[in-house]
Length: 236
Image (cartoon, rainbow, N blue to C red):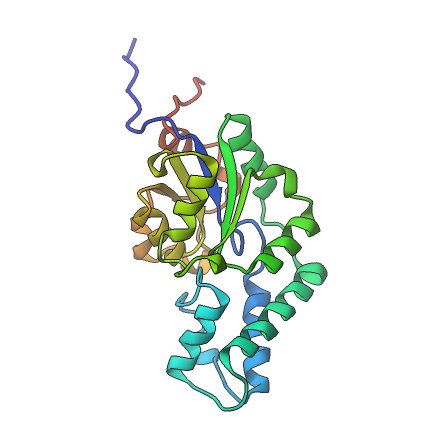
C-alpha cells in the first residue's frame, strides 16, 4: 500500500466568495452600464475595456480610473458613480443570472463545515440586490463591501475585515475570485486563493499568483481543491 501523502495546507476554516463575475454573471452589464453612462457624458471608454484593468475594483475607483485617463466636464465623480450603481441594480433585477455551479460551490464549503462569506467590491445596495434577487441571505455568515474600506481591491482590507467578522485567522481562509485584482488582494491578506477567471482571461499568466485556477465553479469538488483546503482527497 502506498503511504498517504500528508496535506501541505492546514485545514481551512472559511471560504470567502467574490460576487461579480464569480457568483453572478454581471460583468457584461457592468460594461454596458458603464459605457452607457459615460457615453451620456460624451466620453468613450471602450478603448480601455477588455483588458481586465478595472475588474475587481470598486465603482468609485473605476470612475476615478477613467477620469485619470479621459476626464470630462459636467458631472462629478460621485454623481457618475451613483448613475452606474443605479443602472447596475436595475440590470440585476432584469438580467442577472447565477454563474454555473455558484450555489453548489457555496453549499459545498458549507457542507464541509467551513464558514462562508461574501466580500465584494460592489456597493452595499448592489450586493443587497443580488442577495435578494437570488435569496442568498441564509447562505452567508458575513457580507462585506469594499466600499466601506478606505481602499478597495487589490488592497486586502475587505478580506481581512471579513475574516475578522468570521472570527477566523487569514491563514485559515480560502478566497474564490474571478479577477486579478481580487487574487492580488487575497494573497496580500495571506489567504489561499482559487481563481475562476472569465474564459477570455483564463490564459493570462498573471493568474499564477493564485494557488489554484479553475475554469468553472462546477469544478469545486476536484481533488486539487480538497487538497488546498487541507483535507484528504476522497478515496475512489
